[in-house]
Image (cartoon, rainbow, N blue to C red; front, side, top):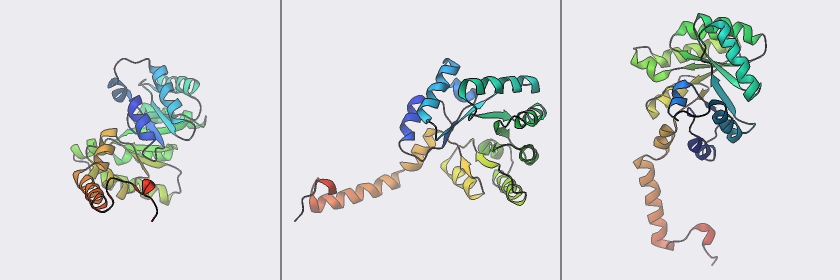
Length: 224
């Protein structure tokens, strides 16, 4: 889930096969001025030990990124994935941090060259920004497929964690193109599971059942 909203994370952890939560400064801004460390620790506690927390650095120099990462790991634990934007400073930081066995999510990916270099640098996840790529006339599906081809060909452990979706259709296309994981806003999960055609089908089944058995459920139906 691509959110820092505590209530939404609690809700959807019980609904979907959630494997983690991704955050960044823009996502955190939506929650207002929260206590950064306390807020993310609450999310980490909700996720438990089987889900991953992804926390983004804010420093813009290589030295600053490394320092941000060390602080993030000190507070949230070594199992935390640190999100590092892929530019020169970010790639240089990844070279240093992979030598320390840090888990890294390469983010702000728009172009093929960013992804190829992040894969070569040893990033654990790539986060291509699907909708933003499409809005800038960049074929996100083609690039995701190309990333996956390199990962398979070179037997790399990197996984594609597609992000930045505007529609449910984009999510499906990213998966079809080879993304092994996706991170989405809760509103798109709701939209994907509560469309009118799904609700109409459920309503039809309920109506047909009640027309025969009345307002009961299978668990309350008596044996004959």
